[in-house]
Image (cartoon, rainbow, N blue to C red; front, side, top):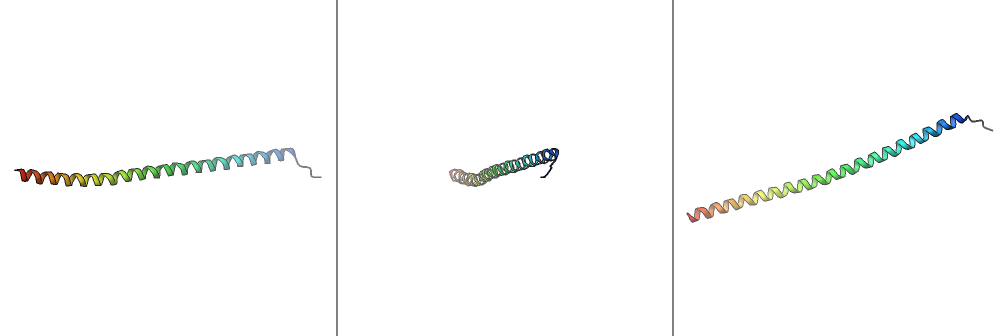
Length: 76
């Protein structure tokens, strides 16, 4: 029969547990980072949408100012 030292078994068991914990923490960290990146992407999409709407609003405002100026000139 094999005569295995109990200290060796304990050492290997501890190392396997440590590796398992490391892999679990690593996977959890990666998943958390991916979630954060996705949230940042969503925030950027919202921000870009606001910028696009602001550009349209500014163009509309300029157009309205030009029409008001024309009406003021016509009245005078």
